[in-house]
Length: 145
Length: 134
View 1 (cartoon, each protein chain N blue to C red):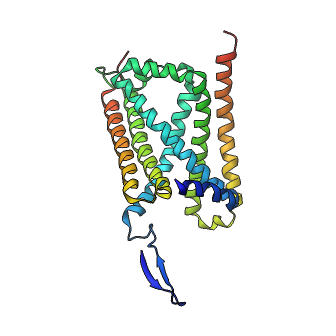
View 2: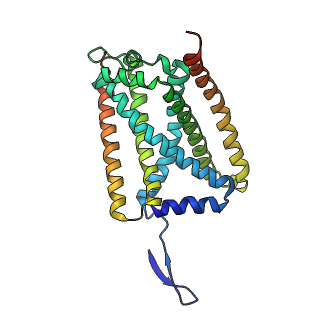
View 3: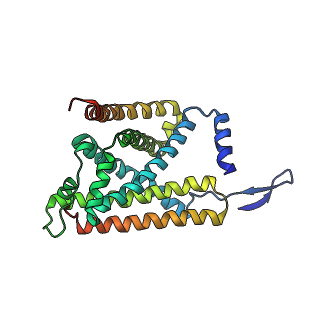
């Protein structure tokens, strides 16, 4: 924030716009939201459609997950690979897209710097853990029950 | 906390028409999806680490209350996706900002086009499952 004098003699504070070239992080985050959002429209909506319309909630089972991902210890088919890649990309993009969105919402309502960092730090840790945990699970494959 | 209260009271007073409600629902649906996603990613990882727990979780999700929750999730997803696309599209083609009401109308129409069959199919299946003949 900079201060300057307006013609009336009063001091006016101006805030540097966030999305200008000078603030690289905000600009990158803004671009990321649009691009990841576009990819996620396809990934997330098709995922929801496959699980809820094609298969149906009542027909979901551990066995179906094993069939899609491939079981641990079994050789991976191309189909398994495609599904794992599809889920991995969707996982990372969705979690980061959501985390950035939440950062914007929290930033609108939480003004204290420390508490903002506390909340966002905790959320980032949770998201980071979920990404690592999820990617590892996709890497090793599903366990048959 | 006071900021949140002020937001709600002043938001109701603002009368910003479609643009304001588009923004509010985009935010609310986004938060809802994020909350669901945290639970969902953890639950699905169980398939690799604890298949018995994963199976239990899936059985839980087949209960009626989750059937209703799924309908809300579908609505949040479709709305957030289409409104997000509207925002990005309007940023790409700024001349279309000239008619925000039209853009909002398209956004709502597309949401309904994608949402209505989804909700009907899902609700229909749930009703058949929970109330239909065994």
